[in-house]
Each structure stands twice: as structure tokens, then as C-alpha cells.
Length: 61
Image (cartoon, rainbow, N blue to C red; front, side):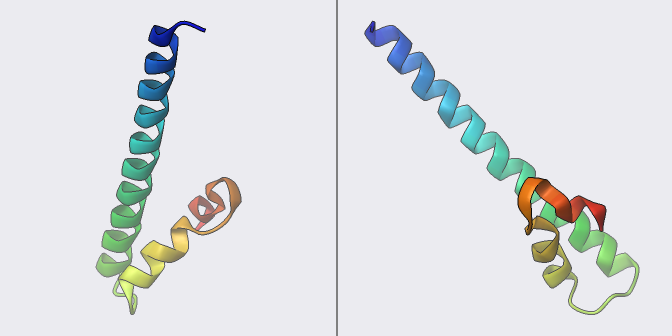
């Protein structure tokens, strides 16, 4: 296997990891802000709760 392919695969994997972390953070913030505007108690807990579950099943909230 050529070294260029290994470097490109590592860069693609890093982009996927960074993108998934960024998406999870944005989902946490979105749910937290929504819970805060609705006047729910502990909006940060709702944000964390939205991240739990397989396949982002927290989106059903």
C-alpha cells in the first residue's frame, strides 16, 4: 500500500471524527437552548440526554 493512501485515509478519518464531535456539540447546544427557552429545569441535562442512545435516537425528543 502506498504511503499517500495511508495519509489520505488518516486525514479522512480525522475529518470524520472532528465532524461527528462538532455535530454532537451543536446538537447538545441546540437542545439546551430549546429547553431553556421552554422554561424546563436543568436545560444542560436535557442537552446531555439528547446525545444518549444508539443512532442519535435522542433526536426523537
